[in-house]
Length: 183
Image 1 (cartoon, helix red, strand yellow):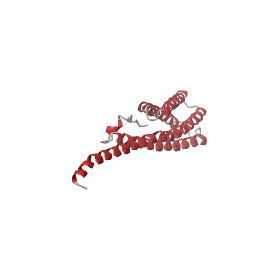
Image 2 (cartoon, rainbow, N blue to C red; image 1 turned 120 degrees about the vertical axis):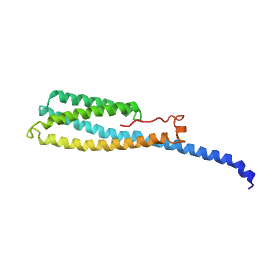
Image 3 (tube, rainbow, N blue to C red; image 1 turned 90 degrees about the horizontal axis):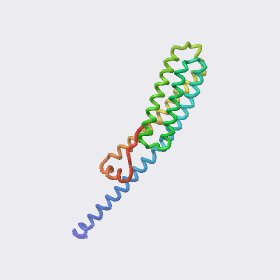
């Protein structure tokens, strides 16, 4: 093979390398983006289970004669969080839906903290074993939600980082890859 024939093949070989790289980068972005809805569904499952426990906890607190306003606040926060989660369930990669869910969960956490502060003032005898069991179940549920949230958010970070790496960034916009928000 002569130097002229090698030089003639060089542009073709370079073009092939670039094309293979583009196909590989596209497939990588697509694979990572497709994993996000699956990870969100895991988060959603744990989120729903936690809402069931929170609902039972609220009912147990009604028996303890906790301030109705605090329980109404918990109910409203639960409904808001459920609505935000339903919205995010439809489009689990939409940044606005995920931001709405994150905000609703913050409101729910504040409502729970107010109730826990109020419970601290209730006599131990009124806070029976079933309510304490629900608190333990709620703590376990919180841990599973946080684990699923962390997995989803780590995948989102990996996806968003891949979107901004050069030269993948050149392919992202033309092929419809957009940044995703975290939960």
